[in-house]
Length: 629
Image 1 (cartoon, rainbow, N blue to C red):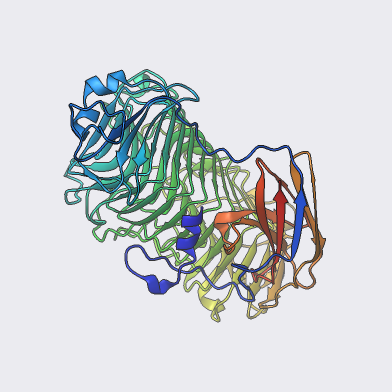
Image 2: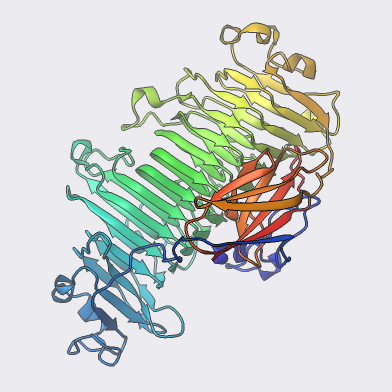
Protein backbone atom coordinates (compact mmCIF):
# COMPACT_ATOMS: atom_id res chain seq x y z
CA UNK A 1 0.00 0.00 0.00
CA UNK A 2 2.95 2.35 0.48
CA UNK A 3 3.50 2.66 -3.29
CA UNK A 4 -0.14 3.57 -3.89
CA UNK A 5 -0.26 6.20 -1.16
CA UNK A 6 3.03 7.76 -2.16
CA UNK A 7 1.69 8.10 -5.71
CA UNK A 8 -1.67 9.49 -4.64
CA UNK A 9 -0.20 12.11 -2.34
CA UNK A 10 2.62 13.22 -4.64
CA UNK A 11 2.45 16.84 -5.73
CA UNK A 12 1.15 17.49 -9.21
CA UNK A 13 4.51 19.02 -10.14
CA UNK A 14 5.92 15.53 -10.60
CA UNK A 15 3.99 15.49 -13.90
CA UNK A 16 4.62 13.11 -16.77
CA UNK A 17 3.33 9.60 -17.30
CA UNK A 18 4.20 8.52 -13.77
CA UNK A 19 3.07 11.63 -11.93
CA UNK A 20 -0.05 11.65 -9.76
CA UNK A 21 -2.51 14.36 -8.94
CA UNK A 22 -3.02 15.46 -5.38
CA UNK A 23 -6.50 14.74 -4.13
CA UNK A 24 -9.10 17.46 -3.79
CA UNK A 25 -8.83 19.93 -0.90
CA UNK A 26 -11.01 18.92 2.05
CA UNK A 27 -11.48 22.35 3.61
CA UNK A 28 -10.13 22.54 7.18
CA UNK A 29 -8.13 19.34 6.82
CA UNK A 30 -4.67 19.19 8.42
CA UNK A 31 -2.26 16.50 7.28
CA UNK A 32 -1.26 13.81 9.76
CA UNK A 33 1.70 12.59 7.67
CA UNK A 34 4.71 12.47 9.98
CA UNK A 35 2.71 13.80 12.91
CA UNK A 36 3.46 12.23 16.28
CA UNK A 37 0.57 10.20 17.74
CA UNK A 38 -1.78 11.99 20.13
CA UNK A 39 -1.80 8.84 22.27
CA UNK A 40 0.25 5.63 22.56
CA UNK A 41 -0.91 2.24 23.84
CA UNK A 42 0.92 -1.07 24.15
CA UNK A 43 -0.40 -4.58 24.81
CA UNK A 44 1.01 -8.09 25.14
CA UNK A 45 -0.45 -10.59 22.67
CA UNK A 46 -0.17 -14.19 21.60
CA UNK A 47 -0.78 -13.26 17.97
CA UNK A 48 1.80 -14.48 15.46
CA UNK A 49 4.29 -12.32 13.57
CA UNK A 50 3.33 -11.14 10.09
CA UNK A 51 4.10 -14.02 7.69
CA UNK A 52 3.28 -12.69 4.22
CA UNK A 53 0.30 -12.62 1.89
CA UNK A 54 0.75 -15.78 -0.14
CA UNK A 55 2.19 -19.24 0.52
CA UNK A 56 5.95 -19.64 0.30
CA UNK A 57 7.65 -22.28 -1.84
CA UNK A 58 9.86 -24.65 0.15
CA UNK A 59 11.53 -26.76 -2.56
CA UNK A 60 14.45 -26.34 -4.95
CA UNK A 61 15.54 -23.01 -6.43
CA UNK A 62 16.51 -22.65 -10.08
CA UNK A 63 18.34 -19.55 -11.28
CA UNK A 64 17.92 -17.93 -14.71
CA UNK A 65 20.24 -15.27 -16.13
CA UNK A 66 20.63 -13.51 -19.46
CA UNK A 67 24.10 -15.05 -19.82
CA UNK A 68 23.06 -18.45 -18.49
CA UNK A 69 23.40 -21.68 -20.42
CA UNK A 70 21.15 -24.58 -21.24
CA UNK A 71 24.11 -26.78 -20.27
CA UNK A 72 23.92 -25.64 -16.64
CA UNK A 73 21.70 -27.24 -14.01
CA UNK A 74 20.45 -23.85 -12.76
CA UNK A 75 20.67 -24.89 -9.11
CA UNK A 76 23.03 -22.12 -8.05
CA UNK A 77 23.64 -18.48 -8.92
CA UNK A 78 26.97 -19.47 -10.42
CA UNK A 79 25.40 -21.98 -12.85
CA UNK A 80 22.21 -20.33 -14.10
CA UNK A 81 20.21 -21.51 -17.07
CA UNK A 82 19.07 -19.20 -19.86
CA UNK A 83 15.53 -18.18 -20.82
CA UNK A 84 15.39 -20.79 -23.58
CA UNK A 85 15.91 -23.54 -21.02
CA UNK A 86 13.28 -22.08 -18.68
CA UNK A 87 10.78 -22.01 -21.57
CA UNK A 88 11.43 -25.64 -22.55
CA UNK A 89 8.90 -28.41 -21.94
CA UNK A 90 11.67 -30.55 -20.47
CA UNK A 91 12.50 -27.98 -17.80
CA UNK A 92 8.87 -27.23 -16.93
CA UNK A 93 7.80 -30.87 -16.76
CA UNK A 94 10.56 -31.49 -14.20
CA UNK A 95 9.34 -28.75 -11.84
CA UNK A 96 7.77 -29.90 -8.61
CA UNK A 97 5.48 -28.27 -6.10
CA UNK A 98 7.52 -25.90 -3.95
CA UNK A 99 10.17 -25.16 -6.60
CA UNK A 100 11.20 -21.57 -7.36
CA UNK A 101 12.44 -20.24 -10.70
CA UNK A 102 14.22 -16.93 -10.08
CA UNK A 103 15.45 -14.45 -12.69
CA UNK A 104 18.47 -12.24 -12.08
CA UNK A 105 17.73 -8.63 -11.30
CA UNK A 106 19.06 -6.14 -13.82
CA UNK A 107 18.95 -8.66 -16.68
CA UNK A 108 16.83 -8.34 -19.84
CA UNK A 109 14.86 -11.28 -21.21
CA UNK A 110 12.41 -11.95 -24.03
CA UNK A 111 9.19 -13.95 -23.74
CA UNK A 112 8.58 -16.21 -20.73
CA UNK A 113 6.05 -18.96 -21.50
CA UNK A 114 5.00 -21.56 -18.95
CA UNK A 115 2.38 -24.22 -19.71
CA UNK A 116 0.85 -26.86 -17.46
CA UNK A 117 3.01 -25.99 -14.43
CA UNK A 118 1.02 -26.80 -11.29
CA UNK A 119 2.16 -26.61 -7.71
CA UNK A 120 0.11 -27.79 -4.75
CA UNK A 121 -2.18 -26.04 -2.30
CA UNK A 122 0.02 -24.26 0.23
CA UNK A 123 3.21 -25.08 -1.70
CA UNK A 124 3.23 -23.23 -5.04
CA UNK A 125 5.77 -22.93 -7.81
CA UNK A 126 7.25 -19.42 -7.58
CA UNK A 127 8.49 -17.27 -10.48
CA UNK A 128 10.42 -14.35 -9.02
CA UNK A 129 13.66 -12.40 -8.82
CA UNK A 130 17.06 -12.76 -7.18
CA UNK A 131 20.09 -10.56 -6.67
CA UNK A 132 20.27 -6.80 -6.33
CA UNK A 133 19.17 -3.93 -8.51
CA UNK A 134 16.22 -3.40 -10.84
CA UNK A 135 13.56 -6.02 -11.40
CA UNK A 136 14.32 -8.56 -14.14
CA UNK A 137 13.01 -7.02 -17.39
CA UNK A 138 10.94 -8.92 -19.97
CA UNK A 139 10.20 -7.40 -23.38
CA UNK A 140 8.52 -9.08 -26.34
CA UNK A 141 6.37 -8.40 -29.42
CA UNK A 142 3.48 -10.57 -28.25
CA UNK A 143 2.21 -11.93 -24.94
CA UNK A 144 5.28 -11.34 -22.81
CA UNK A 145 4.81 -13.44 -19.67
CA UNK A 146 2.34 -16.20 -20.49
CA UNK A 147 1.01 -18.75 -17.98
CA UNK A 148 -1.17 -21.30 -19.77
CA UNK A 149 -3.08 -23.89 -17.74
CA UNK A 150 -0.98 -23.12 -14.65
CA UNK A 151 -2.08 -23.01 -11.04
CA UNK A 152 -0.73 -22.96 -7.50
CA UNK A 153 1.79 -20.50 -8.87
CA UNK A 154 3.28 -17.19 -7.70
CA UNK A 155 4.51 -14.55 -10.17
CA UNK A 156 6.23 -11.62 -8.49
CA UNK A 157 8.75 -8.81 -8.91
CA UNK A 158 8.94 -8.63 -12.73
CA UNK A 159 9.17 -5.58 -15.01
CA UNK A 160 7.32 -6.26 -18.26
CA UNK A 161 7.10 -4.25 -21.48
CA UNK A 162 4.63 -5.49 -24.06
CA UNK A 163 5.49 -4.23 -27.56
CA UNK A 164 2.16 -3.53 -29.18
CA UNK A 165 0.78 -2.91 -32.64
CA UNK A 166 -1.39 0.09 -33.41
CA UNK A 167 -4.89 -0.06 -31.94
CA UNK A 168 -7.77 -0.80 -34.30
CA UNK A 169 -11.07 -2.76 -34.08
CA UNK A 170 -9.98 -4.56 -37.25
CA UNK A 171 -6.59 -5.57 -35.87
CA UNK A 172 -6.74 -8.86 -33.94
CA UNK A 173 -3.13 -8.69 -32.80
CA UNK A 174 -3.87 -7.85 -29.18
CA UNK A 175 -1.09 -8.54 -26.72
CA UNK A 176 -0.73 -8.67 -22.95
CA UNK A 177 2.13 -8.04 -20.57
CA UNK A 178 1.04 -10.88 -18.26
CA UNK A 179 -1.42 -13.36 -19.77
CA UNK A 180 -3.21 -16.15 -17.85
CA UNK A 181 -4.95 -18.50 -20.30
CA UNK A 182 -7.57 -21.17 -19.53
CA UNK A 183 -9.23 -21.47 -22.95
CA UNK A 184 -11.29 -24.48 -24.06
CA UNK A 185 -10.83 -26.62 -20.97
CA UNK A 186 -13.05 -28.28 -18.41
CA UNK A 187 -10.21 -28.71 -15.93
CA UNK A 188 -10.24 -26.78 -12.67
CA UNK A 189 -7.39 -24.44 -11.66
CA UNK A 190 -6.75 -22.60 -8.41
CA UNK A 191 -4.44 -20.41 -6.37
CA UNK A 192 -2.64 -17.94 -8.64
CA UNK A 193 -0.78 -14.96 -7.10
CA UNK A 194 0.39 -12.00 -9.26
CA UNK A 195 2.24 -9.59 -6.93
CA UNK A 196 4.49 -6.53 -7.17
CA UNK A 197 5.06 -6.40 -10.94
CA UNK A 198 5.28 -3.39 -13.27
CA UNK A 199 3.65 -3.81 -16.68
CA UNK A 200 3.50 -1.25 -19.46
CA UNK A 201 3.43 -0.68 -23.20
CA UNK A 202 4.32 2.25 -25.45
CA UNK A 203 1.12 4.24 -25.03
CA UNK A 204 -2.67 4.31 -25.14
CA UNK A 205 -2.73 3.89 -28.94
CA UNK A 206 -1.36 0.33 -28.78
CA UNK A 207 -3.46 -2.85 -28.92
CA UNK A 208 -2.20 -4.00 -25.55
CA UNK A 209 -3.43 -5.19 -22.16
CA UNK A 210 -1.53 -5.04 -18.90
CA UNK A 211 -2.70 -8.19 -17.07
CA UNK A 212 -5.30 -10.34 -18.84
CA UNK A 213 -7.06 -13.51 -17.67
CA UNK A 214 -8.97 -15.34 -20.40
CA UNK A 215 -11.19 -18.42 -20.68
CA UNK A 216 -12.76 -18.99 -24.09
CA UNK A 217 -15.38 -21.67 -24.78
CA UNK A 218 -17.02 -23.03 -27.95
CA UNK A 219 -20.51 -22.08 -26.74
CA UNK A 220 -22.47 -21.30 -23.58
CA UNK A 221 -23.13 -24.97 -22.77
CA UNK A 222 -19.42 -25.80 -22.93
CA UNK A 223 -18.27 -22.85 -20.82
CA UNK A 224 -16.89 -24.25 -17.55
CA UNK A 225 -17.91 -23.30 -14.03
CA UNK A 226 -15.16 -22.07 -11.72
CA UNK A 227 -12.36 -22.72 -14.19
CA UNK A 228 -10.14 -20.57 -11.95
CA UNK A 229 -10.64 -20.18 -8.20
CA UNK A 230 -8.60 -17.92 -5.89
CA UNK A 231 -6.73 -15.44 -8.06
CA UNK A 232 -4.90 -12.58 -6.34
CA UNK A 233 -3.63 -9.64 -8.42
CA UNK A 234 -2.08 -7.26 -5.90
CA UNK A 235 0.31 -4.30 -5.68
CA UNK A 236 1.06 -4.22 -9.39
CA UNK A 237 1.70 -1.03 -11.35
CA UNK A 238 0.12 -1.05 -14.82
CA UNK A 239 0.33 1.89 -17.20
CA UNK A 240 0.45 3.15 -20.79
CA UNK A 241 -1.52 0.33 -22.40
CA UNK A 242 -4.18 0.80 -25.07
CA UNK A 243 -6.89 -1.59 -23.88
CA UNK A 244 -7.46 -2.58 -20.21
CA UNK A 245 -4.96 -2.31 -17.40
CA UNK A 246 -6.26 -5.41 -15.56
CA UNK A 247 -8.88 -7.58 -17.25
CA UNK A 248 -10.66 -10.89 -16.72
CA UNK A 249 -12.74 -12.08 -19.65
CA UNK A 250 -14.62 -15.06 -21.07
CA UNK A 251 -16.02 -15.34 -24.57
CA UNK A 252 -17.95 -17.74 -26.79
CA UNK A 253 -16.23 -18.56 -30.06
CA UNK A 254 -19.24 -19.85 -32.02
CA UNK A 255 -21.97 -17.78 -30.40
CA UNK A 256 -19.89 -14.62 -30.60
CA UNK A 257 -20.76 -12.93 -27.33
CA UNK A 258 -18.49 -11.97 -24.46
CA UNK A 259 -19.10 -12.09 -20.73
CA UNK A 260 -21.98 -14.47 -20.20
CA UNK A 261 -21.39 -16.50 -17.06
CA UNK A 262 -21.23 -15.32 -13.45
CA UNK A 263 -19.49 -18.52 -12.37
CA UNK A 264 -16.62 -18.73 -14.86
CA UNK A 265 -14.22 -17.46 -12.18
CA UNK A 266 -14.58 -17.49 -8.39
CA UNK A 267 -12.70 -15.70 -5.60
CA UNK A 268 -10.98 -13.08 -7.75
CA UNK A 269 -9.16 -10.42 -5.70
CA UNK A 270 -7.87 -7.32 -7.53
CA UNK A 271 -6.45 -5.21 -4.70
CA UNK A 272 -3.93 -2.41 -4.05
CA UNK A 273 -2.85 -1.92 -7.66
CA UNK A 274 -1.94 1.35 -9.38
CA UNK A 275 -3.35 1.65 -12.93
CA UNK A 276 -2.99 4.77 -15.07
CA UNK A 277 -2.74 6.11 -18.63
CA UNK A 278 -4.96 3.48 -20.24
CA UNK A 279 -6.73 3.68 -23.62
CA UNK A 280 -9.95 1.97 -22.50
CA UNK A 281 -10.60 0.50 -19.07
CA UNK A 282 -8.51 0.79 -15.95
CA UNK A 283 -9.75 -2.39 -14.23
CA UNK A 284 -12.39 -4.50 -16.00
CA UNK A 285 -13.52 -7.64 -14.17
CA UNK A 286 -16.12 -9.95 -15.72
CA UNK A 287 -17.58 -13.44 -15.33
CA UNK A 288 -16.88 -13.91 -11.65
CA UNK A 289 -18.49 -14.48 -8.28
CA UNK A 290 -17.31 -13.73 -4.74
CA UNK A 291 -14.65 -11.18 -5.69
CA UNK A 292 -13.10 -7.86 -4.70
CA UNK A 293 -11.74 -4.78 -6.43
CA UNK A 294 -10.39 -2.97 -3.38
CA UNK A 295 -7.86 -0.23 -2.55
CA UNK A 296 -6.77 0.48 -6.11
CA UNK A 297 -5.58 3.84 -7.42
CA UNK A 298 -6.86 4.31 -10.99
CA UNK A 299 -6.49 7.46 -13.06
CA UNK A 300 -6.51 8.58 -16.69
CA UNK A 301 -8.48 5.68 -18.18
CA UNK A 302 -10.36 6.08 -21.49
CA UNK A 303 -7.52 8.20 -22.86
CA UNK A 304 -7.49 6.88 -26.45
CA UNK A 305 -8.54 9.78 -28.69
CA UNK A 306 -10.36 7.97 -31.52
CA UNK A 307 -14.02 6.82 -31.27
CA UNK A 308 -13.33 3.08 -31.54
CA UNK A 309 -15.40 0.97 -29.18
CA UNK A 310 -13.38 -1.87 -27.68
CA UNK A 311 -13.85 -2.65 -23.95
CA UNK A 312 -15.57 0.58 -23.00
CA UNK A 313 -13.97 3.33 -20.92
CA UNK A 314 -14.17 3.66 -17.13
CA UNK A 315 -11.84 3.59 -14.17
CA UNK A 316 -13.32 0.37 -12.74
CA UNK A 317 -16.04 -1.74 -14.35
CA UNK A 318 -17.76 -4.91 -13.13
CA UNK A 319 -19.76 -6.81 -15.75
CA UNK A 320 -21.45 -10.19 -15.33
CA UNK A 321 -20.51 -10.30 -11.65
CA UNK A 322 -22.18 -11.69 -8.54
CA UNK A 323 -21.20 -11.07 -4.89
CA UNK A 324 -18.50 -8.47 -5.44
CA UNK A 325 -17.06 -5.71 -3.27
CA UNK A 326 -15.68 -2.56 -4.93
CA UNK A 327 -14.29 -0.65 -1.96
CA UNK A 328 -11.69 1.91 -0.86
CA UNK A 329 -10.63 2.87 -4.40
CA UNK A 330 -9.55 6.30 -5.62
CA UNK A 331 -10.39 7.07 -9.26
CA UNK A 332 -9.97 10.32 -11.18
CA UNK A 333 -9.31 11.79 -14.61
CA UNK A 334 -11.16 9.14 -16.66
CA UNK A 335 -12.21 10.14 -20.18
CA UNK A 336 -14.63 8.89 -22.85
CA UNK A 337 -12.26 7.67 -25.60
CA UNK A 338 -13.96 10.22 -27.91
CA UNK A 339 -17.18 8.15 -27.82
CA UNK A 340 -19.34 10.49 -25.69
CA UNK A 341 -20.55 7.83 -23.29
CA UNK A 342 -19.40 6.11 -20.08
CA UNK A 343 -16.19 7.70 -18.63
CA UNK A 344 -17.41 6.96 -15.10
CA UNK A 345 -15.11 6.47 -12.16
CA UNK A 346 -16.89 3.20 -11.29
CA UNK A 347 -19.46 1.35 -13.37
CA UNK A 348 -21.71 -1.50 -12.21
CA UNK A 349 -22.44 -2.74 -15.70
CA UNK A 350 -25.07 -5.17 -16.99
CA UNK A 351 -25.64 -8.70 -15.71
CA UNK A 352 -24.54 -7.77 -12.19
CA UNK A 353 -26.10 -8.61 -8.85
CA UNK A 354 -25.10 -8.31 -5.20
CA UNK A 355 -22.34 -5.79 -5.95
CA UNK A 356 -21.34 -3.52 -3.07
CA UNK A 357 -19.74 -0.19 -4.09
CA UNK A 358 -18.61 1.43 -0.85
CA UNK A 359 -16.04 3.89 0.53
CA UNK A 360 -14.70 5.00 -2.85
CA UNK A 361 -13.51 8.47 -3.82
CA UNK A 362 -14.25 9.41 -7.45
CA UNK A 363 -13.49 12.90 -8.67
CA UNK A 364 -13.03 14.89 -11.86
CA UNK A 365 -14.03 12.06 -14.17
CA UNK A 366 -15.65 13.06 -17.47
CA UNK A 367 -18.82 11.02 -16.84
CA UNK A 368 -20.38 10.24 -13.48
CA UNK A 369 -18.48 9.45 -10.33
CA UNK A 370 -20.46 6.20 -10.13
CA UNK A 371 -22.72 4.91 -12.90
CA UNK A 372 -24.69 1.75 -13.45
CA UNK A 373 -26.27 -0.30 -16.17
CA UNK A 374 -28.94 -2.95 -15.48
CA UNK A 375 -28.37 -4.63 -12.12
CA UNK A 376 -30.13 -6.29 -9.22
CA UNK A 377 -29.70 -6.14 -5.43
CA UNK A 378 -26.65 -3.84 -5.50
CA UNK A 379 -25.43 -1.15 -3.09
CA UNK A 380 -23.84 2.28 -3.61
CA UNK A 381 -23.03 3.66 -0.16
CA UNK A 382 -20.57 5.79 1.80
CA UNK A 383 -18.80 7.08 -1.33
CA UNK A 384 -17.43 10.57 -1.93
CA UNK A 385 -18.25 11.77 -5.48
CA UNK A 386 -16.84 15.18 -6.18
CA UNK A 387 -16.78 17.48 -9.21
CA UNK A 388 -17.25 14.77 -11.80
CA UNK A 389 -18.18 16.46 -15.07
CA UNK A 390 -21.29 14.36 -15.87
CA UNK A 391 -20.65 15.22 -19.51
CA UNK A 392 -21.32 11.95 -21.36
CA UNK A 393 -24.54 10.48 -22.72
CA UNK A 394 -26.60 8.69 -20.09
CA UNK A 395 -24.31 9.77 -17.27
CA UNK A 396 -25.45 13.26 -16.44
CA UNK A 397 -25.01 13.19 -12.66
CA UNK A 398 -22.54 12.59 -9.85
CA UNK A 399 -24.43 9.27 -9.58
CA UNK A 400 -26.22 8.04 -12.72
CA UNK A 401 -28.44 4.97 -12.98
CA UNK A 402 -29.36 3.51 -16.38
CA UNK A 403 -30.55 0.17 -17.78
CA UNK A 404 -28.43 -0.22 -20.90
CA UNK A 405 -27.80 -3.84 -21.95
CA UNK A 406 -27.88 -3.80 -25.79
CA UNK A 407 -30.47 -6.63 -25.47
CA UNK A 408 -27.58 -8.98 -26.14
CA UNK A 409 -27.44 -12.74 -25.86
CA UNK A 410 -26.38 -13.88 -22.42
CA UNK A 411 -28.34 -11.28 -20.42
CA UNK A 412 -31.41 -13.01 -18.93
CA UNK A 413 -34.72 -11.38 -19.82
CA UNK A 414 -35.35 -10.36 -16.20
CA UNK A 415 -31.99 -8.52 -16.06
CA UNK A 416 -32.79 -5.61 -18.37
CA UNK A 417 -33.92 -3.36 -15.54
CA UNK A 418 -32.71 -1.95 -12.22
CA UNK A 419 -34.19 -3.47 -9.10
CA UNK A 420 -33.43 -3.39 -5.37
CA UNK A 421 -30.62 -0.85 -5.80
CA UNK A 422 -29.83 0.94 -2.53
CA UNK A 423 -28.04 4.31 -2.74
CA UNK A 424 -27.34 5.55 0.77
CA UNK A 425 -25.05 7.78 2.85
CA UNK A 426 -23.05 9.07 -0.13
CA UNK A 427 -21.61 12.56 -0.42
CA UNK A 428 -22.34 14.20 -3.79
CA UNK A 429 -20.50 17.49 -4.36
CA UNK A 430 -20.51 19.49 -7.56
CA UNK A 431 -21.36 22.54 -9.65
CA UNK A 432 -23.23 20.94 -12.55
CA UNK A 433 -24.31 23.39 -15.26
CA UNK A 434 -27.29 22.03 -17.18
CA UNK A 435 -26.63 18.75 -15.33
CA UNK A 436 -27.84 16.89 -12.28
CA UNK A 437 -26.53 15.65 -8.96
CA UNK A 438 -28.51 12.37 -9.08
CA UNK A 439 -29.80 11.15 -12.45
CA UNK A 440 -31.66 8.16 -13.87
CA UNK A 441 -32.60 7.27 -17.44
CA UNK A 442 -34.00 4.17 -19.10
CA UNK A 443 -31.69 3.94 -22.14
CA UNK A 444 -32.58 0.70 -24.00
CA UNK A 445 -33.53 -1.48 -21.02
CA UNK A 446 -36.91 -2.36 -19.53
CA UNK A 447 -39.11 0.00 -17.55
CA UNK A 448 -40.07 -2.39 -14.74
CA UNK A 449 -37.73 -0.84 -12.15
CA UNK A 450 -38.69 -1.73 -8.59
CA UNK A 451 -37.61 -1.47 -4.96
CA UNK A 452 -34.94 1.17 -5.59
CA UNK A 453 -33.96 3.42 -2.67
CA UNK A 454 -32.16 6.79 -2.39
CA UNK A 455 -31.74 7.58 1.31
CA UNK A 456 -29.61 9.53 3.81
CA UNK A 457 -27.33 11.02 1.15
CA UNK A 458 -25.71 14.45 1.37
CA UNK A 459 -26.15 16.42 -1.87
CA UNK A 460 -24.01 19.58 -1.91
CA UNK A 461 -24.33 22.03 -4.81
CA UNK A 462 -21.42 24.49 -4.58
CA UNK A 463 -22.24 26.61 -7.65
CA UNK A 464 -24.14 29.88 -7.84
CA UNK A 465 -26.61 29.19 -10.67
CA UNK A 466 -29.52 27.11 -9.39
CA UNK A 467 -31.46 27.76 -12.58
CA UNK A 468 -29.27 25.45 -14.68
CA UNK A 469 -29.04 22.32 -12.51
CA UNK A 470 -31.22 19.74 -10.81
CA UNK A 471 -30.58 18.08 -7.49
CA UNK A 472 -32.55 15.06 -8.72
CA UNK A 473 -33.66 14.06 -12.21
CA UNK A 474 -35.75 10.88 -12.68
CA UNK A 475 -36.00 10.84 -16.45
CA UNK A 476 -36.40 8.69 -19.54
CA UNK A 477 -39.31 6.51 -18.45
CA UNK A 478 -37.69 5.34 -15.23
CA UNK A 479 -39.46 4.65 -11.97
CA UNK A 480 -37.85 5.38 -8.59
CA UNK A 481 -39.79 4.08 -5.64
CA UNK A 482 -38.23 5.61 -2.54
CA UNK A 483 -36.57 8.86 -1.44
CA UNK A 484 -36.08 9.56 2.25
CA UNK A 485 -33.97 11.48 4.76
CA UNK A 486 -31.62 13.10 2.25
CA UNK A 487 -29.92 16.41 3.02
CA UNK A 488 -29.48 19.07 0.33
CA UNK A 489 -27.23 22.14 0.46
CA UNK A 490 -26.72 25.25 -1.70
CA UNK A 491 -25.97 28.97 -1.46
CA UNK A 492 -29.72 29.68 -1.50
CA UNK A 493 -32.61 27.76 -0.03
CA UNK A 494 -35.34 29.72 -1.80
CA UNK A 495 -34.93 27.68 -5.01
CA UNK A 496 -34.95 23.90 -5.33
CA UNK A 497 -34.85 22.27 -8.74
CA UNK A 498 -35.66 18.66 -9.56
CA UNK A 499 -37.54 16.58 -12.10
CA UNK A 500 -39.36 13.35 -11.31
CA UNK A 501 -40.91 11.28 -14.08
CA UNK A 502 -42.16 8.52 -11.74
CA UNK A 503 -45.87 7.90 -12.48
CA UNK A 504 -48.38 8.85 -9.77
CA UNK A 505 -49.52 5.24 -9.64
CA UNK A 506 -46.11 4.28 -8.25
CA UNK A 507 -46.32 6.76 -5.36
CA UNK A 508 -48.08 6.43 -2.02
CA UNK A 509 -49.12 8.76 0.82
CA UNK A 510 -48.14 12.42 0.63
CA UNK A 511 -45.88 11.67 -2.33
CA UNK A 512 -48.97 11.44 -4.54
CA UNK A 513 -49.39 15.20 -4.08
CA UNK A 514 -46.00 15.76 -5.67
CA UNK A 515 -46.40 16.79 -9.30
CA UNK A 516 -43.06 16.09 -11.00
CA UNK A 517 -41.14 19.32 -11.49
CA UNK A 518 -40.62 21.48 -8.45
CA UNK A 519 -39.10 24.86 -7.57
CA UNK A 520 -40.14 24.68 -3.92
CA UNK A 521 -38.47 22.37 -1.47
CA UNK A 522 -41.63 22.04 0.62
CA UNK A 523 -43.25 20.23 -2.29
CA UNK A 524 -40.25 17.89 -2.75
CA UNK A 525 -40.45 16.94 0.95
CA UNK A 526 -43.70 15.16 0.19
CA UNK A 527 -41.63 12.88 -2.04
CA UNK A 528 -38.40 12.80 -0.01
CA UNK A 529 -39.75 12.22 3.48
CA UNK A 530 -37.56 13.52 6.29
CA UNK A 531 -35.31 15.50 3.95
CA UNK A 532 -33.77 18.91 4.73
CA UNK A 533 -32.46 21.84 2.66
CA UNK A 534 -29.80 24.05 4.23
CA UNK A 535 -27.24 26.72 3.37
CA UNK A 536 -23.69 25.91 2.39
CA UNK A 537 -21.12 26.09 5.16
CA UNK A 538 -17.42 25.37 5.42
CA UNK A 539 -17.57 24.90 9.19
CA UNK A 540 -15.63 21.88 10.39
CA UNK A 541 -16.34 19.75 13.45
CA UNK A 542 -13.81 20.04 16.25
CA UNK A 543 -11.14 17.44 16.87
CA UNK A 544 -12.09 14.36 18.89
CA UNK A 545 -10.48 14.28 22.33
CA UNK A 546 -9.34 11.93 25.12
CA UNK A 547 -8.54 8.78 23.13
CA UNK A 548 -8.38 5.38 24.80
CA UNK A 549 -7.70 1.85 23.62
CA UNK A 550 -8.18 -1.67 24.92
CA UNK A 551 -7.14 -5.02 23.52
CA UNK A 552 -9.01 -8.27 24.12
CA UNK A 553 -9.68 -11.40 22.08
CA UNK A 554 -7.64 -10.09 19.15
CA UNK A 555 -9.69 -6.88 18.91
CA UNK A 556 -8.36 -3.34 19.35
CA UNK A 557 -11.20 -1.17 20.69
CA UNK A 558 -10.71 2.59 20.23
CA UNK A 559 -12.78 5.24 21.99
CA UNK A 560 -12.73 9.04 22.13
CA UNK A 561 -14.70 12.05 23.30
CA UNK A 562 -17.21 13.48 20.82
CA UNK A 563 -16.39 16.31 18.41
CA UNK A 564 -18.40 19.51 18.58
CA UNK A 565 -20.17 21.28 15.73
CA UNK A 566 -21.72 19.94 12.54
CA UNK A 567 -20.65 16.28 12.71
CA UNK A 568 -21.83 13.66 10.21
CA UNK A 569 -19.50 10.82 11.15
CA UNK A 570 -15.89 9.89 11.84
CA UNK A 571 -13.69 8.37 9.13
CA UNK A 572 -11.27 5.82 10.58
CA UNK A 573 -8.00 4.97 8.81
CA UNK A 574 -5.10 2.59 9.32
CA UNK A 575 -1.89 4.26 8.12
CA UNK A 576 1.84 3.67 8.12
CA UNK A 577 3.81 5.84 10.52
CA UNK A 578 4.60 8.57 7.98
CA UNK A 579 1.52 8.29 5.75
CA UNK A 580 -1.40 10.62 5.28
CA UNK A 581 -5.02 9.53 5.17
CA UNK A 582 -6.70 8.44 1.95
CA UNK A 583 -9.69 6.37 0.92
CA UNK A 584 -7.02 3.80 0.03
CA UNK A 585 -6.24 3.24 3.73
CA UNK A 586 -9.68 3.88 5.15
CA UNK A 587 -11.20 1.28 7.46
CA UNK A 588 -14.72 2.70 7.56
CA UNK A 589 -17.04 5.24 9.12
CA UNK A 590 -18.69 5.41 12.50
CA UNK A 591 -21.30 7.77 13.93
CA UNK A 592 -20.42 6.84 17.52
CA UNK A 593 -17.23 7.58 19.42
CA UNK A 594 -15.85 4.07 19.12
CA UNK A 595 -14.33 1.74 16.56
CA UNK A 596 -13.18 -1.88 16.80
CA UNK A 597 -10.41 -3.35 14.66
CA UNK A 598 -9.49 -7.04 14.48
CA UNK A 599 -5.70 -7.49 14.42
CA UNK A 600 -4.22 -10.50 12.64
CA UNK A 601 -0.61 -10.26 13.78
CA UNK A 602 1.83 -8.45 16.06
CA UNK A 603 3.14 -5.03 15.12
CA UNK A 604 2.62 -1.29 15.32
CA UNK A 605 -0.78 0.03 14.24
CA UNK A 606 -1.40 3.73 13.55
CA UNK A 607 -5.06 4.76 13.52
CA UNK A 608 -6.46 8.15 12.46
CA UNK A 609 -9.91 9.31 13.52
CA UNK A 610 -11.13 12.08 11.18
CA UNK A 611 -14.36 14.01 11.92
CA UNK A 612 -16.36 15.01 8.83
CA UNK A 613 -19.25 17.45 8.54
CA UNK A 614 -22.50 16.82 6.69
CA UNK A 615 -21.08 18.87 3.82
CA UNK A 616 -17.84 16.92 3.54
CA UNK A 617 -15.54 19.29 5.46
CA UNK A 618 -12.85 17.48 7.43
CA UNK A 619 -11.93 18.61 10.93
CA UNK A 620 -8.64 18.12 12.74
CA UNK A 621 -7.86 14.44 13.18
CA UNK A 622 -6.80 12.31 16.12
CA UNK A 623 -3.84 9.93 15.68
CA UNK A 624 -3.51 6.86 17.89
CA UNK A 625 -0.64 4.36 18.03
CA UNK A 626 -1.29 0.83 19.30
CA UNK A 627 1.61 -1.60 19.66
CA UNK A 628 0.92 -5.33 19.91
CA UNK A 629 4.06 -7.10 21.13
